[in-house]
Length: 131
Image (cartoon, rainbow, N blue to C red; front, side, top):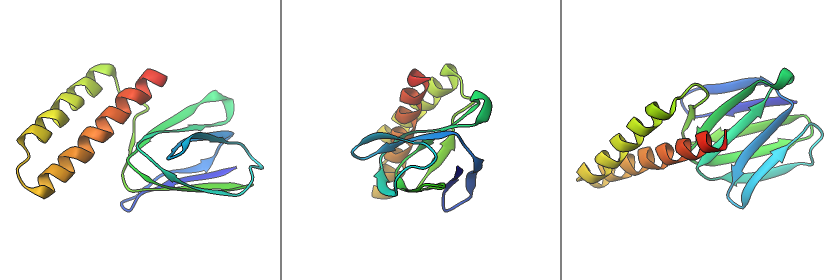
């Protein structure tokens, strides 16, 4: 089935996949070719795209929307990041930096951005645990 993961800035993934799992607000859901039509809001978490041959593409999204039909999955995410090649050390450093940014934030905008970075870092930690 065709899969696209899109943010306002760019297309993170576009290609054929065997299966997709996504973090719906009502729980994680999986999609196989021929799936019934579905629209779901997404929460922060892991989008796992399984390609032919067992290869996997892993992305963390902050929030968004998934539209599923029998031949295609489209994920529109507010923010996404490829976490396929991240190490535990990278993620630990990033989590510490995000926590420091939250503590140092003064304005509402700084607090909002720091909070988003912290949510993404925590979602990446969880994604690596699930790997």
